[in-house]
Image 1: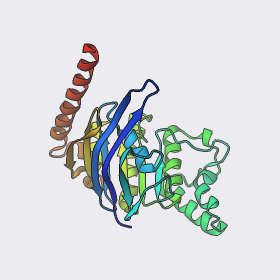
Image 2: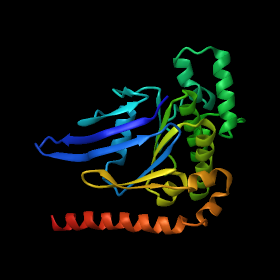
Image 3: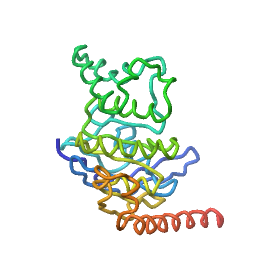
Length: 267
């Protein structure tokens, strides 16, 4: 499978009052297979809109998405989604949540069990397969959501603030798991986050988006995700260039936020 191409995407939402909102304008990116992209930006810059277009939930006003040379025309198992909340099936146990996709495909029971057992082990939930979802902590539920996504063997994993609702310690552990899964599976990953530190830690590539209309303002290629595969994440944060890049991006986003608030105050 070749890469994910975002080709000159624009998105306009028409409002009932006859006005419109230009959420995205002329966004282009070319992701190679196996790259991990983090997307940052102030609220309202179109991050989630872009992710929904990549998932096939929205059709762009202009431009197109291509995966493996084929135009994306709607949702597909080739693109798996992990939401901020696990969006798990509460009436199913952990095992049945994970093997839901393979079951819907009609995969034989033995093969489903092999995949599910492997993923339970991979995400550290091998003793929790028969547990009800509501018995799990938030971090454990997100582990199930990751495993359920991987069970479909997608080419691209789309992540919309998947760690945003977790406490600091659990979030750090989950960041390590995301890096581990990225490196072991060689999946292409697109991660939306509001945390600059998280974007630096997880983004092999990182783009900062500016509002409105949403567009790519700055792109970085960073070494920290690769370091984080084999290093303690706290050591990575203390490594050369991390703090300087974090402060540079924070200042950039704060400037955008102040500009947005200034426009609101003057309106």
